[in-house]
Length: 87
Image (tube, rainbow, N blue to C red; front, side, top):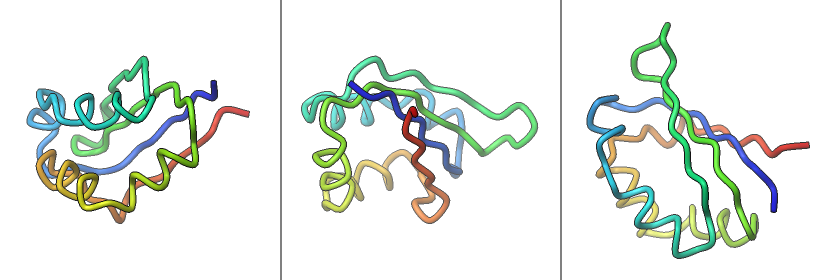
């Protein structure tokens, strides 16, 4: 199971950290061990490290309205999102 890292900017870091939405939408598609990170030098840059059972399933999910709604709720700026896969 690959581990991936995602980083992006958010509107409100405290809101993003407190939100249960990412776990609620990602766990049902096989994403586990979700860990959150914040950039101490850029207050609105955050990241996740997570284990992904099926990368294609995750990337397909990211194109759905459910993913867009979850990101909007969490204040994610999708145009800043970068996915890195463990090599």
